[in-house]
Length: 118
Length: 112
Image (cartoon, rainbow over all chains, first blue to last red; front, side, top):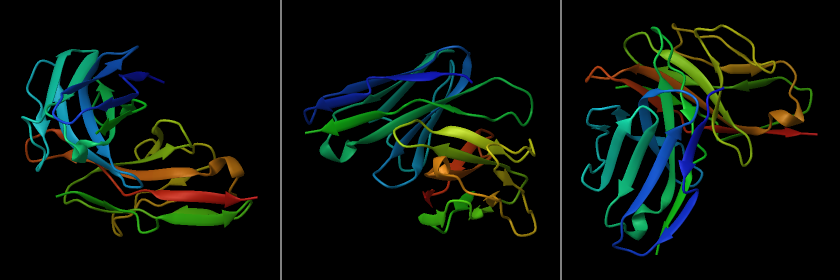
């Protein structure tokens, strides 16, 4: 199957700093990438959907100025958590979906990034 | 709005026993339904999707539009089936984008 990588896998930062997380599709072109947040023992919550070359679509309640998403190429999307605070500590997961025919909606998930804000 | 409900947080069964992980959804149109699985210390991966009507690792799931359900079943559980299972629904949102909504997940524990 298709492979999606995330970097870094873990990051610890001080409150007030910004953190960038990269999501790459390694062997396919991802027309759409998704960013999720997962709290301990809870489900994945979609934060935003990004299509290559256009602005990301954020879910209700997600601050676009705090969680900056860039999808500059068909293989790379980045999530920047700006002015991070302890409540932003979470597990962030990206997924990617390539182009396909109608009904082809499989997403390939990255391994996730554990963010800890001190 | 689309919603996915997995009523059980934890399901424990003995090896060899049948398994049924429940999933109910709400969506007014025609959604696509998926089951994803996450084994310990591994990433989330697709297990099966309703449009394929396939059996993966002995698991099957049938979309029941009348009951708005997509339960995951396996006749004989194996220890390696122990994992977290997520039901997901993909449908176009008001903006025309395909959005995937995940259920809260069910942890399947197969007891040897």
